[in-house]
View (cartoon, rainbow, N blue to C red):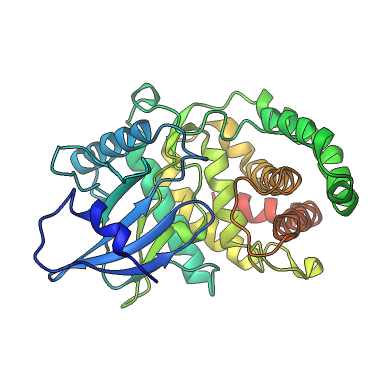
Length: 352
């Protein structure tokens, strides 16, 4: 792969005698991510997806504010402090106007796609709880939305309805069962919207792959991907953590009857998360934690389904029906939660 076009970006941040050594780190769902070396140091170079993040300047301003706040008010290590370019900005642009940023590379670390054992689930939850507790004192008014209405499920459903009306007939036929299910379970979104939930600064996308682990002792090191940190609900963060850390398989699994929440992983997540956030939670939040899991799983199914019907504008795909597979996968997970609800509620109550 030719990385010559990346030299122009890096030279806006660093002076170097030898050309940096680049490698693809991740192609992810959203951003393109590379690593590069200058001398003995390794950094992350990331292209910000303008189709998703319309205002990269706001995104990077948020990131600097959050990093500075956590540096001054928490004991968290491995903060994602962006590297400033030679003009003192936290981003640079290429010749085509695309926005890029440079972040520190955390050595001897890895980000898993799925949880392999209960101790890993515990670590994910503990790290997220610590992170949310550390952000507790940051006023929501300090941070701007990077994606407006990110977890406004009622708004997302309205967009889905519009997209459905113009979607190709064949796609609507293939997605018929998932479309029906989304409509059937839609009242959950209204229930969540009616709750008196406090507005907090939360991660908004704390999936398992956004937690870095140490290769040495397999302890969680930090939460990464701060693009969606903005005002929101603790329920959505708990929900997305459980969605990815406790599922029997990831979003790509096509054997939908094999998708469910692993009770032992759910217990580990509750044990890791709840002690960290117990003192800051309201009674409403405590009473509706499992509803938060259902909410985010159903919303994720809706998001994949909408993107499939709309021509795959948001999530990257490697084959035509991938977003539909993901949507059906998450719908299977949602139904499994309904079937397991009594057991999961008992685990929650035992974890307080």
